[in-house]
Figure 1: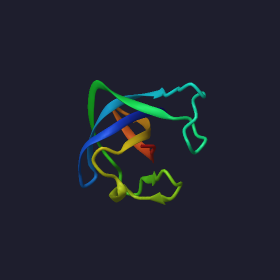
Figure 2 (figure 1 turned 90 degrees about the vertical axis):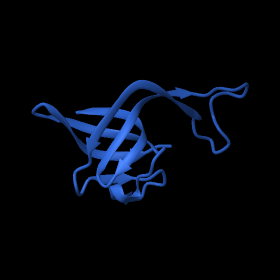
Figure 3 (figure 1 turned 45 degrees about the vertical axis):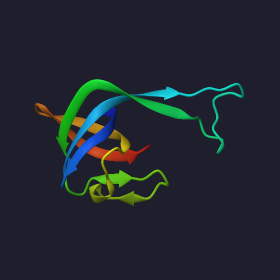
Figure 4 (figure 1 turned 60 degrees about the vertical axis):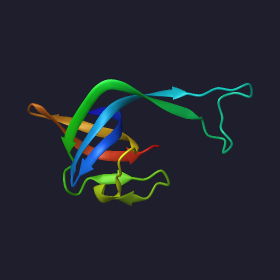
Length: 99
């Protein structure tokens, strides 16, 4: 299993295209916390783009922790994707919207 961090560039039904992103913690003179007390992060796009099919029934967890389906995903969402190798391809097991 592997966790992949990506930002959706295009989504059509259950097929999504995303660019891999890198998470960076933001620090200021008071430390690395934002106003809500959570670590503040930014996402920087990398040069790799992937297209994957989201299997029907795949759980998508929103930033508030609500479990929903891929119909909730939108272009520009940043997400962590849990994948697993199946033969020659990666299969999506679960998605968390993180930004």
